[in-house]
Length: 125
Image (tube, rainbow, N blue to C red):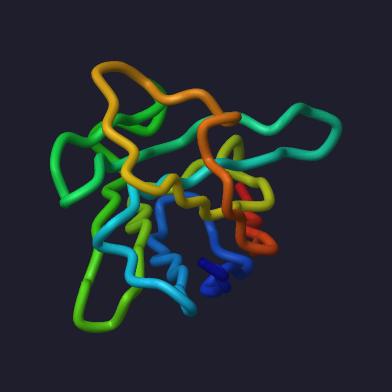
């Protein structure tokens, strides 16, 4: 599956932003999906994931209650709704997909075989 992330931008602290990741080539309903981010000078880190078939979700502790991952199978798209953004959320955000993925704990980055190109989110204080 090919993934195309979009929706990043420059916002102020406390604002909201919704990232989209459009899939093509195969249907996302057969995949677990996830979002990762990489801040300047840091390694890429897990942000959120959803099991195959829209089941259980997992979140980085620092985004719980602020970010929500969701999918729209009619649009073959995965979203990341980000509320109450903080300057430390500034990063390039990547979407990813894992065919048939089903997790019982936070999934490792290596499980995801398909990746989008990343979209930059900058949160000013």
